[in-house]
Length: 148
Image (cartoon, rainbow, N blue to C red; front, side, top):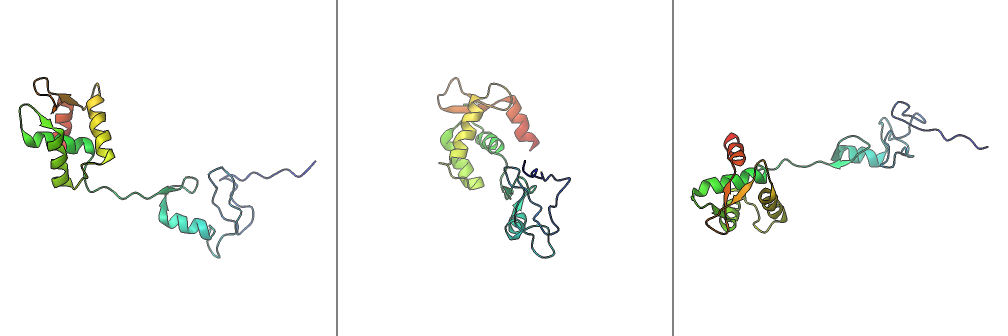
């Protein structure tokens, strides 16, 4: 029989006085020694400064966007045109490009647009029955745009 492998948990954090306190993604303890006077090794102390979140789940810090959500922006674009038929994709893309500096060929914009079109309830876009290629706002989306 061999020695039992000691399991390190957050409750029992240290193997030795100077071992790094970080756990890797697979749940194992970092085997490096901590920097002098710190709790983490050179790699994890760098990551701790440049990443947010708990030590177990390193996630890159995301800068807050300078514009509202795509749902709100698309709703504002349709309301800005004030056409009884609704707004076209072309107009919506031009509005977002001029007012929010959004790339009209962006995949995120395409996904947001199709998500609003395919939604069956809640905030969504309604294709105009009279004019092909024109879209109007649902009541929920109008309320969402007015609240913002």
